[in-house]
Length: 69
Image (tube, rainbow, N blue to C red; front, top):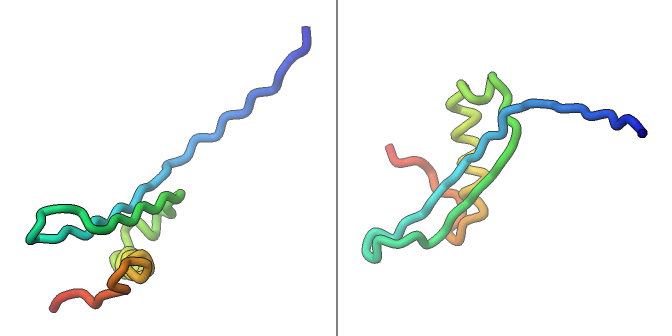
């Protein structure tokens, strides 16, 4: 009987979801779902998270929108 090598690697998979909701219809009009292996430093870096959100929003029908003041 042949032996088979099995290798297991564990890592955390992150999912970043943005939903755009039409408030008049109370329905989703657009959704972005991104998955990646997050870096520990990025998880705690609000500027990096904001930048990721802006990149995803650029793909929305309305383009990237600046944050409200």
